[in-house]
Image 1 (cartoon, rainbow over the protein chains, first blue to last red):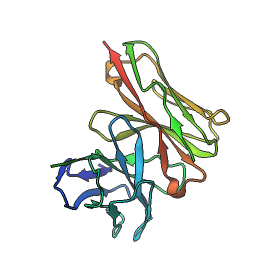
Image 2 (spheres, rainbow over the protein chains, first blue to last red; image 1 turned 30 degrees about the vertical axis):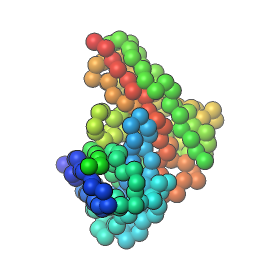
Image 3 (cartoon, rainbow over the protein chains, first blue to last red; image 1 turned 45 degrees about the horizontal axis):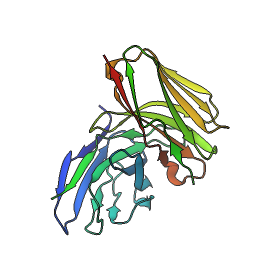
Image 4 (cartoon, chains in turn purple, blue; image 1 turned 60 degrees about the horizontal axis):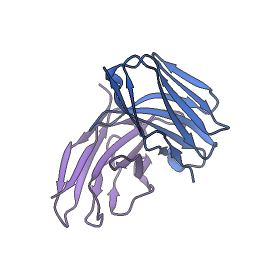
Length: 113
Length: 114
């Protein structure tokens, strides 16, 4: 089945620790996105990548980093510089063109220990 | 800066009643508007995408309209069922938005009572 796989489903971070969230897609999509969702709020864009080896900051990139070494994979690292990391993180991808729907994974819930 | 608003934040209806969900956006220069469904603790499922040149899109019991000039979209769900209980989010891709990024509303949480 084609789709987006995020892992792990739940993640806990200790003080001062970096953690990495995985996102893999087999839809052959060029563009991938990371969003953050806080309770009762819409999604906010953290980073996006339109092509391999290239990525751009979104609206709330501080304290996060990404890489795009393969078309299928777009991991997100939440660094210790992110002081309020507790949230639901969603990865999405889309095909070429501005009228393609975005497809989402099932998310990773990150909490602080 | 594009802003997307969904009112009300929550809605409760008896089973069988039609649902009407509203979405408004401040900048009418958009490529498209998308409606999503989100179940608790899950990702988003795309329901309908309306291109800026279209007035509406339909899929089964779902119908979404778009009035770009007034910055509004409405999602209609006919003959609601308890399985329609979820949060519904709308999002737009603005022509000025880099990377085809979506700007989301805060969502409307829907409860359909049996």
